[in-house]
Image 1: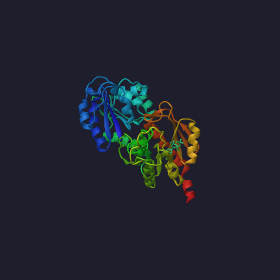
Image 2: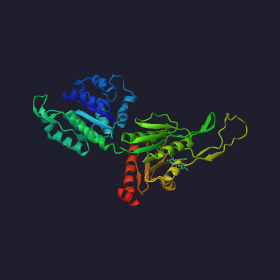
Image 3: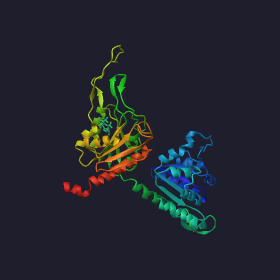
Image 4: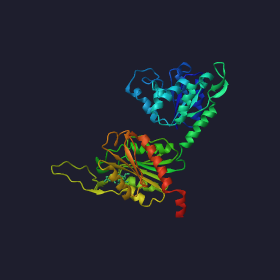
Length: 411
Ligand code: CTP
């Protein structure tokens, strides 16, 4: 899991160093973000050395103090998108007040607003500050929003007083994280087959037919599924993307290669999500030599490829099969038609001409058309988030379509 650890200004900041080590031992990668006050207690170098990653300190400059640039100005969004869990330890009364009110005046507070991942906050402060109505109200606000609070311990505090306010023990903080990671591994034990990217159909040794698919949507689905605990097999057309962590990738080029790879691996999958933009036609003939230029018009004969989704979904049994529909008009009508004609369980449809949707973008605007009649239009959101929503819908659909009772009656 990718954990972002926010360290704020308190004597307990040094304890966050041990937390980084423990989280790494559990296999998580840790990105540390420090507030200005935290740097009065511990240097970023300590965390950089422990985490093996650059520590983020300012909204507009990196920890090396270099000048503001576009990259640092939008980094909080990039960090928010790659955060699976935001942990703030120690959390001061100030940071909780800012989180509660939605103040965004530094990297950590801005990240909190931009982040959709679960949040764990481990407060540490003077006993009176902790007991103050203002702090308690902020804690209640955060709890109501779903933030998990690692309750501070009672004991002797750095200020010389005794009472609640000491940073919760490492084990308690880790337990809070384990509860969340467990809940987020809802695809444990599943095998998910995903197709992504375009296909290329060769005309001759130097020319081919392809399309504008970047593969980003399919890769986002593969990555999200792996993070949620699934074994993921990704059959990929030619793309410029890194294989997501923990994903098994099979590279293919043509529609026929993709068909074979998908059919080969489909038996072991419980869910199949075909996000690839597969060529509908391929040249009847692939010339061995380069086609030479001439003055007469050139006609190329094309033949239809096999529809992988339709072929696979014919005998899908209890597998959940998801297709995509890239449309330029009458999105709902075409998507519902594809759902029925291809025997899919879910069609993720997008109008590729809409702003913020379609090829090579990081966002998408889609509607989910489900077999049980549900249409669910999602607002414009990052493809990483669309991926999570697709997986949520797949799980919902499976519980509706293949509830244990109906499975029983089929036996
Ligand atoms: N698909 C497939 N095999 C093909 C063509 C498409 O499996 N040879 C799958 C895609 O992966 C996608 C879905 O079918 O999940 C819909 O693809 P799309 O290109 O939107 O639709 P087509 O069926 O090709 O129809 P059209 O191009 O006429 O809209």
